[in-house]
Amino acid sequence: MIDLRSDTVTKPSEEMRKIMFKAPVGDDVYGEDPSVNELEEYAANLFGKEAALFVTSGTQGNQAAILAHTKPGQEIIMDNEAHVFLYEGGATSAFAGVQSRTLTNDRGKMGLDDLEEAIRGEDIHFPETALIWLENSHNRSGGSVLPVSYMREVYELAQKYKVPVHIDGARIFNAAVASNASVKEIATYSNSIQFCLSKGLGAPVGSILVGEKSFIDLARKKRKMLGGGLRQAGILAAPGLHALKTGIHRLAEDHEQAKMLAKVVDEYTDLNVINEVETNIILADTSKSGRSANDWLAIFKDKGILAVAFSPTTIRFTTHIDVSKEDINTVIETIKTL
Image (cartoon, rainbow, N blue to C red):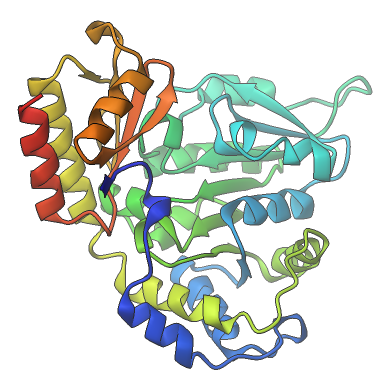
């Protein structure tokens, strides 16, 4: 099977497995795991932030950030298709006791006027606006990229009202490569960022949260509350560090293969690609074909290709490190015969 369901399905390379086997370890709760410490220092420097925190998942990183940024009864402004709103089990309200104020989005971008209007004023009836939330790249918009200029405008607006900005950067390196910007430049316009070591970079597990040292110190305590106090975590941190050092440069290949595949889907099937393919995600609408997304998934699976339903009439294909050029060519030739 050629698995295009998600970039979360990648397997660690043999080199990563050897690195895991040999990784020096210690008790991370005591701050004594050398592999974790090296990873956190490297990540902080890469993003131009004071400190970093290794977490087990993107969701744990996002929730630790919310707990560190907010107090119960406050409010977070985010777009109405944000991962943290749709796909994290209601953790924002369950753990932090804050509510989400969602705004409509265009390819992940909330309108600046709408955003400013949503920031709460001084009124005893209103919750306090504690955080502005961005997602880059934006999953529900098909991996769309937030321009650096837009993030700068949001950050300047947030500073005006003394509200911090968090970026859910699960696929931040895809966004950086696609926009020809460094993650350090992107990070300039945020107070904190969470990014995944898995997905496009190919590590088996883990994410990183970066920000000011005082924020990371507090987030470390919140991570403990979430069950993320790690012991000999170096066997997970070491492949993450390897992924950061070696995996970013090849993401452009995933983007190019996604564009190739999107063109063929549009030309040779009655599926309609509905997103501008900027990174590694393709969204195809099935409505014109008269078949549901699940019908199409069965057709593709019968041909040895796995994808995932994004809605009853939308399919998502995702390219990644474990999908080779030969695999994409096989998918392309298969689609041409449908």
